[in-house]
Image 1 (tube, rainbow, N blue to C red):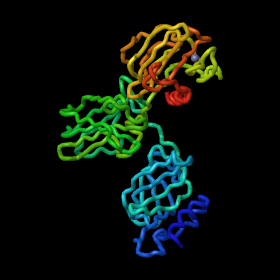
Image 2 (cartoon, rainbow, N blue to C red):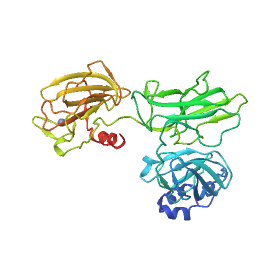
Image 3 (tube, protein in one colour):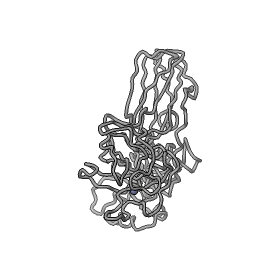
Length: 405
Ligand SMILES: [Zn+2]
């Protein structure tokens, strides 16, 4: 069998049959020319869930899974292939373990589908049978200080923690707040870390000094890393307090994506009340006398509160015969300009003002050329509104923001 023909043969077989008819371990290195090194080909026999499971056979984001099989010792990467082509593939690093079993954590974004294993030497398993993966559990609400679960470590400080919200928005103020209180033994060192659940990296850290016991302390975060917007997704506050004798207390274990956790979103839906997206006439690109409709109309009662979908700097606040009262905000950490029209009153903000994500900018109205109370919203690419940018269809964004706001 020639080396070069193997991939074509594998690619042609059906998914489930592949597992049964895949070449034997080591075949990839068989070579009519001779002389090449043996490359172990890992093989997946079974995938089960070990911890934080939906059930033994059903994983969810954040679960720890176990793979049993053969030639696993050199595996350093596990790929979740998902269900929808390459776009939903997710790979995680795997620490080398035994030849017949390995374990790793399911990333939050992984979806149902086959998995495969890759070794550092380039060996690659066939695709496994589809592994069932449910969405991760939502963050556990913990808005008030509460004792950290689990047995207290003797000699370590006692900990209470709380996190103000299970949802946060980039650029909102106040940000999401993490509070903590120590009791009993005092801490000689204290660290608060903000961990991204997507990859386990610490995106921000605080090292408070001289924290008195029995007094609540708070840190807060606005969804930014420096000036840039952090990636949307699950984040957790992790508090580590060491006592004088070196014993350590923590509010959660590595990989816990519920305790003192929240989901960060990049926008909030701007209409804070019942609303609907209307019919074809209100869509982006619909015909108008002499031009096309450059935004999306969303209908709501006049007077419904309007907030900034994304904070930024106000570029224009004006009245126009067609647009009525309108305001244009240059979004922070993005090239996009956000345009809100037909407000019932002029916005209290003026050009140059800074606005936070979620801050009230006015109310739905029908000023200007409007039939019925609605928000006409436009989104423009950089450099911006009538300034070299161009409008794009806001409806997909509005629907996404609406789904989580
Ligand atoms: Zn409109």
